[in-house]
Length: 257
Image 1: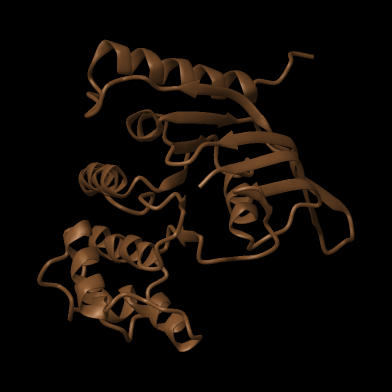
Image 2: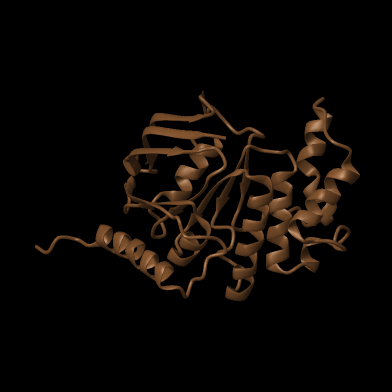
């Protein structure tokens, strides 16, 4: 799935009727099958832009297109994975994973046989044996695997991931990053991944867009040609991470009066 954004601007209207500019003149092209990271400090507008791609929010001006069609609302071609898991606590892993496809089936869409689809998704995210567990019985990393499997269940063209590993401990986060790369290599979905971690962006992305402080636009873009699996301790990785960190920091500096 190819995604294009042209001159996107987003303003929030505050209770006092004043406008708060969040995104300003943002332009980006994301190719089919690319793993793209949106990197920048908290509050700079990364998640807002992702939600605009998802159709959950609407730009004030500008255009976002998916495979040549204007985004006018949410759709099964773009699945979101949220930071807070957003699972139904009263549903089992299997019920959470199959929620979207069952909803589509009730609306008359043809879907694959549930047992086959469930097994494929459970195997893909490494949750074998937990199909009948409830979210409260799972670790944070396992809950997020359920969220990823649920997002993939409707066979979207793109996964939109809003800091999905931010609430997970460091060791589990590394494991989840590797798991996500395994999923991407098998499915070749377009992935747009929001993060404020330089090392995470450098480890995961084909391309990293560094966002400027709010009102945000893309300050600098990096194409990452380091071979996979990437070694965060290698000199090339360390150098790349430092370049991205300098790009973020330079954008945050204020001129001396």
